[in-house]
Amino acid sequence: MLSEEEKRELLEMAGSSQLREEFRRLRQSPRSSRLMDLDRLMRFLTDFSRFSPARPPRESGPPYTQILL
Image (cartoon, rainbow, N blue to C red):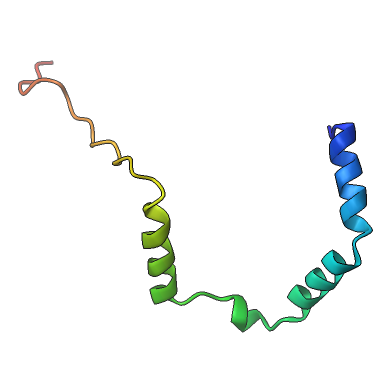
């Protein structure tokens, strides 16, 4: 459910001629210009990973070396 403020913001956005024009241009742009080649994707992922300095968790294994069943 949308709050009253969210509803108001959506109505304001719907009334914006500039926003409508931008969406019209996006719809008319050729699909090929929106596709991403592998090099561009890898560059994006590399750049984006710099925003997350945390290392991924290590694969967890058993906490002991001998597993007895």
